[in-house]
Image (cartoon, rainbow, N blue to C red):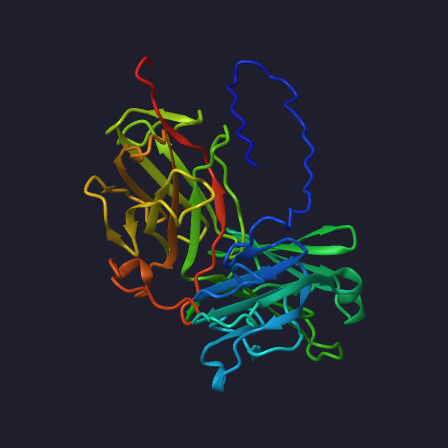
Length: 423
């Protein structure tokens, strides 16, 4: 859900206050193949469970704030083969390419795993099976809050937030004035019993590194007593690191509900927004949905990555249209796929900013008298200074998801619909 607030300076009022809440997702809905899960508990199932017959490559990344994650595979019925060559489930203590493998299995039998950090990844691949005994798998996961935690780290799109217990510092012999980051000029503030540092990714001595499938931002929180020659206190040296996927896939879908543009933040904690614009000048975004258009009308879209890291860039990997917002498989039309342009009207527009992409196409309808068109696009977030997916262009054959996983999240913006003849 998104909220847009606009005002001018003509009248001074108190503004507004609103309260929001969340509810558990209906688990009877079809389970998507892979994705990013941030709810404290949930269910993961192989596609079409308990009738998992088709080939599949799925990656689920689970993230929970300030908690470890425990996952229980309570029903496993996979093809049993040498080296699990027909399919397997792999569980990683973090991201698939840069974290320890907690376990890889096939066949049957329950399994249980627990992460050491606030993230865990499940990778499922299968070549398919005709056996009636192959059901796939069903798993439950839950986030477990760490008791008596004295240090906490939160990662956002712009900065990392480090919290240190004042009692913990005092137990080590330090006061709140004795702790520093790489850049000593970046000072914290105190909130109750916590000392809080806000650490931008491009300030305070933060170091950026790219490693396989992640972009890492790190800093060090250390303590020392100024003016002293010797120390008898226990050393304080906290390594702070936020990791984001280097090739994060962003799913954007236009859904059949009258909503305005909104931004959804998920794992990687990169914020991204997508707007329709009225003209190629990209000055005035579209706020009213459904967005009514004429056949062959030029449509203009701009996606923006919102991050303090100026060395990131965006790339349009795939855009698929469908008359059904819940089905991008049965009846679809490709505008661009794996960086390869499929529609003759698809065009890109220049932009001065690497964190933006601009593109467009001519409006169309599906032959079977569907007036609404839903678009699902995948954008890739990359490190600007490395040879990553953003610089590879058109790839005719996509690599398997189990070897180069891309995590996904969805942003709902609104439908586009053709105008009626009398409008």
